[in-house]
Length: 559
Ligand SMILES: Nc1ncnc2c1ncn2[C@@H]1O[C@H](COP(=O)(O)OP(=O)(O)OP(=O)(O)O)[C@@H](O)[C@H]1O
Ligand SMILES: [Mg+2]
Image 1 (cartoon, rainbow, N blue to C red):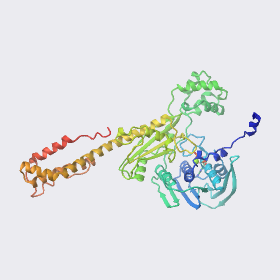
Image 2: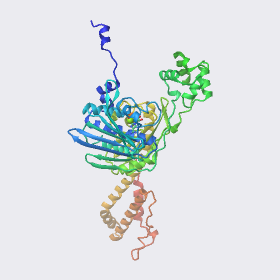
Image 3: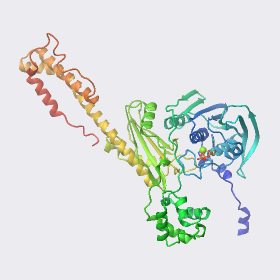
Image 4: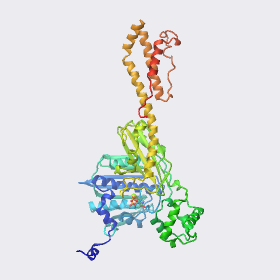
């Protein structure tokens, strides 16, 4: 038998870099096409975050060039605030190092893994370091070549230097990596296209292997700046509470509750202490686990205001609609923004847009989290779960689960912390309240689409009927003439007038009645054409009108 001593000899610490070296698929690097996308995405997301936080309108340059068999050079350059010299090695050469993890703020990045994971993949596949240039605008450009010491999860500086006299400010990255460039559905091109839709304030130039593509700035101002917030008491869990109690600078329990959490006033803090039977003036560090548990018990039943919502910055209905119009040129588009909600104490908000017809020829789903398009893991995403949970037929939209219509669905979730299902940040976890909000937003928008579709179908139904009348016009004219022994020409003329009248009516209805139509009778008043007075409308015409009205029935499709 092998004893515990034997196993003790085998046990040792694992660095996070070693872990992800073995599990690179968890970071999204599970195939060569996707690997190129991941690198571009990490670089562009960071550039957008940095420029937005520094309140600079983003100008981003991306280049992907094939330099050998399945070898690519990727360049990503921004006009952001740059990175100070001291921080450069750790940011790009150490996993789990960043400025966003410890804050509750709506950012594209959260984890502190993204860009160093790209360095790791590059060195694993080609052995090449990441080349960085950074300037904070002080005339100095710091240049680094960096790899990762995987055993230690520490940066390995291969080369460093500084160049003086440049006027540029920002960050430029150059990767030499293994990969494959393709332009199908889940591609760099699609990611940049969708990024342009959700970030109309950004200017992006992409030099792709198949040529230059420019995504021009559509909006001249930055989105509202989302604010940082503190945690909400209703979302806090025991482990976090006890750690916060240990680490706080507050000297009493009451001041701990009011200063470390959002929306807790002195009155509420005192109420919590009294209900938990703990002295208000107790030192937070002295609160034991049993007392912390009691605090949480009490907190559950205390009424608290929802977190402040100025921490969220959705795109807004107009931007969603404009983006969809610009990209897809649909015949109908609308959007819905839900009021903010809370999961685990963290605020989030959902906005959706639906675009129908036009150049859209099949169902298309566009998922976004904090303005970042999500291209993979669609099946695992809360957005897909919400969509498949809707009975679309109730809104006159064909299809079971996913609508089978020329319909583009745009769903955007913003939050101070997006609950991704994995480190590759490709799908949103299915918290029930999140699924519910997405569903409500989609249903609201689907209702509007349903109204449009039923109007459209009604219009097509009438158009079809008029076409039928036209088709049998000659036969009908002959039959009526035979029965009534009236002149054929006169009957034909009246019959055609009747059809034209109804054609005009349908066109008017389609234009919402806004279109100026000819005055009734204008044509009939042409000299020499008119026979009889308007009140002399023949009984045949009246009968035909009645016939039409009687046959008219509302389109019940989809009700
Ligand atoms: N282009 C840039 N300009 C300025 N700062 C940057 C830039 N790129 C990265 N940073 C800084 O480096 C940090 C680490 O970036 P990284 O992408 O690894 O993590 P993150 O963006 O915080 O989170 P995530 O892993 O979710 O992407 C960021 O938090 C940011 O502070
Ligand atoms: Mg990042």
